Image 1 (tube, helix red, strand yellow):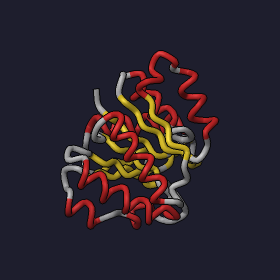
Image 2 (image 1 turned 90 degrees about the horizontal axis):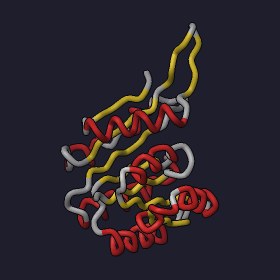
Image 3 (image 1 turned 120 degrees about the horizontal axis):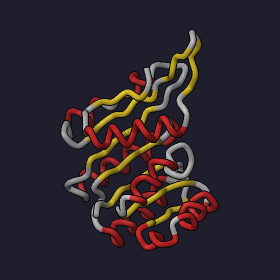
Length: 177
């Protein structure tokens, strides 16, 4: 069993969380709202002991990190971290990556970058990639083109792409175009 940390795993990445829960892994979810985490636990009562939830906004980095430390005390070091952190959470993003790389020696971090009006690749974290080339991966969310029009990815498409990126373990993955 692996310990999987998912930040953003109750909203857009819910299917990602459910995938790892169904596989029997220990899953830690950090989200702002209890009711979404409670809903996931209620859906998997036989797996509840494998799910650790942290109701905390990452705009309070130290409090969020303390919750993650408690999950490590419960499940052991994090093996896979999937981080869907908006640019407003940059302080927490740097804090959690520094902590995981120094306290969970086998952690592989998958940083998810959202599609936006700007090029998400402009947010790439070259310093993390250079320092931890085999343990820091980036996933870029793109778009889908159909019949001459463009649309955002669905939550299911995003989760499918993230799961595939984790399985393939490439340094960079693009979901969509």
